[in-house]
Length: 108
Image (tube, rainbow, N blue to C red; front, top):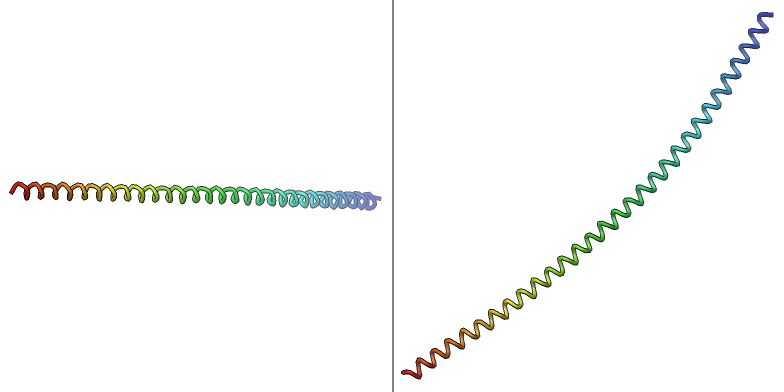
């Protein structure tokens, strides 16, 4: 009779153990699936953030090019004005010198 009771207890213990292991395996599988989904979402969020950063960098680059172009145009305009002022000053200087030479010739 002891053997029958011990055998029944042993069978009960083994069935509880197998059921428990199966439930643990199922929980582990669900946990892995949830972790996989979380990783996919994190990857998508990272890609979106990277795309936004790329767009921001592109915009900053375009702004820098525009600013450099504008600064170049301003420099060209300033150089052109300075050149025109120098030509006008040279003309005035030549005219004044010519007038002095004329006056000197007329006085002689």
